[in-house]
Length: 292
Image 1 (cartoon, rainbow, N blue to C red):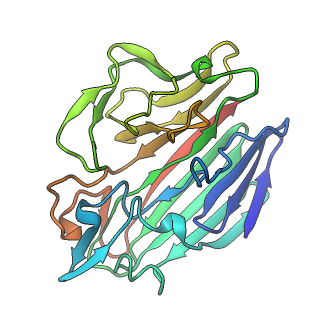
Image 2: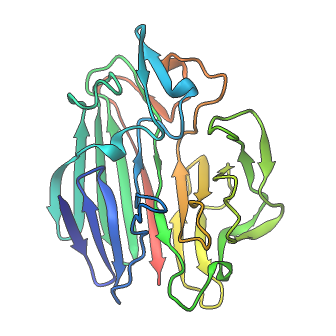
């Protein structure tokens, strides 16, 4: 089921499957989210929970039992319940249930709240620990923005821009999606990364500890932009599927990283975005402004 909210600038549609934003149009009716062509990439803006990236060995253990797990967790692949639909707000919840417990044996509540404020979409993810002794999890965002903004532009007309000069240091997860202890600089002393059709030939770039509060997609000749507020996120990834020319670009603020090649199999021994005591909750917000 899908639900829509709008204001004078934006119209946002979210699907209960994955609590995933599936359409975002500006006042002129232009679609700004990637429309999930399955021949390229079948998603729009999935939620990554309760882990980001891949698991060592494709699985984890808990109390002696092994749980296989695919990339980016399971929240994007299951139905969420819409709990609130107002003029300017959509809220969804996912609770541990018969479908999730075989994938991740913990009680939890994941709340996803979307609000519109002018030309900005605020997406807040809140995790609650209802009863567990300790609830550890990873979490991240994965929105895909359609490129080019119109049929008069090509990939090279766009760049990923920072607030100021950066030397974005990236952690490497090559060749199998697991951190290997290596890192590299995507560039040095730059204010922007030029988009090219081969920028993602080796997959995503996971930038760590940026000084900039914002990472943006800029159309260089017009100044039209999509601005992601990444302040407070330790990791910001950029990625696109292998399609030439590029059909979209993702700006992905994450609070956790993929597993490393030598991570322990026990779930609670792995690195996490947060670990909650019983009754505790934790939240994070991605705010994205569409200056188009």
